[in-house]
Length: 84
Image (tube, one colour):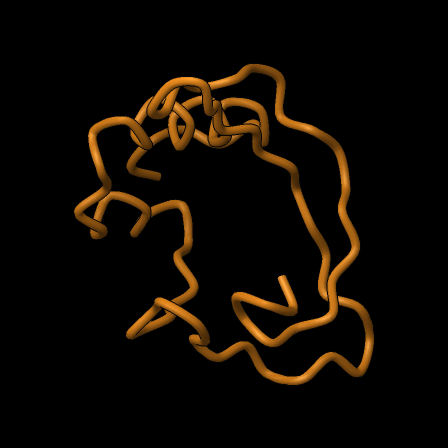
């Protein structure tokens, strides 16, 4: 998180599942919490922009096709309904 967004965060629980990327890679997802006093997030490295999305705005992003199942499963894991 520090390398990509410039924030200090701690990993939470792992979202169950793995989502295939280009072989041999898979995506795994964890929840995270910003640590107190962490700087404001900003795009670093290969990113042009950053925005926080509430559950009702999650589909405002043009997700890559292989990311969509991970987003859906993460919402379900958090007990959130799509489009709410």
